[in-house]
Image (cartoon, rainbow over all chains, first blue to last red):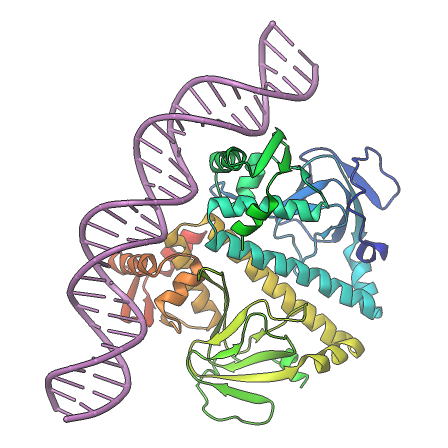
Length: 215
Length: 215
DNA sequence: CGGACCCTTGATAGCTTTCAAGTCAGGTGG
DNA sequence: CCACCTGACTTGAAAGCTATCAAGGGTCCG
């Protein structure tokens, strides 16, 4: 069980798996809920393969995606009793599950586990701070560029990028509308920054130009 | 030194102090920098009195304030070697300083210290997530209302609220312009939600209505 | 081949920003 | 004690970026 917080999974391991490998693993289909906002946070998870989103929804239906997660990522860490975000798969996914009390006990007796937990939380915080800066001070184009580059980096992609989420997911992460995301991607294509073999595949044709947009 | 991460300071203790109380304390005037973005993160801090902002600045000058801190708050925690944000006082402030290696050593040998560190980091993460939701999915009015209510809660104020930051600070935290903040506050006053004895004092006249705006 | 879902594109509207003056308050010096 | 000065704040008018409303196009799959 310790492996949940110890071994990062190589990003190459991202084939959807339809079966539960053992008692500690759980498989999900496309667009399935792993846990909901407000639900007791009694487990922590590590994504073995696939990808997912964590999000919050306002009373009136406005949705904000907090983060996307990929193979190897740990998610579901909470300080309180309940989850503050919901977690849903983007496609078929395999997840490793660990009871929270077991982890707490482990952290209590092993310093390295406690440190790793802190490290994971700090990483989340850093990502969240970048998200704030992006939503607060960047234009639509800059946001889309940042997301594409982040995707490339985190999935270890070269020029050809696999986009596991819908335009709506991108919009709800970037705090834009689906139309604005679509228009922006089209504009990038028109400007020769990217090519779109399919809607869910992005070929980075001028990475330097994209990077220049976000710094 | 342990007290840096153990004892929350009562929010009532917020009188500006002009002198250094002992070797572990440091006093600052108005609008002074405690540390800058990119600077080595070799210390952690606790605000004894006063208030401050942490912020990041984009190349072109756009500024995003990540957080405001008040008496009792710990700040300056980083996972990496350098600070990702700058910290500047809003007014005169007294700060308790602790070398980071000392804290790391303490956390290494004492489980309760390690847990407290994790708790502090998780609190920051929670605040950051709320910030994301606010910037991403809330209107100007909702943002200003949220800030006023947050200020009231964190400084333990009743109806009369002390606003320690300028309109520009508010704007850079909420990702609005100074003009929009000013207009929104004026509108609140016009609508009878608040009164403004001075620009830096806000009297909450209809707290329920403000709360209804943010849920 | 039909249907459903996702995506794209166009036209218009709206909220916030930008640009531009003023106004106000606190501090300083005569 | 008051005039002045400077920084902070407010207010108005117009522009701009993104959202909204509306249609149409593509693609996967039964």
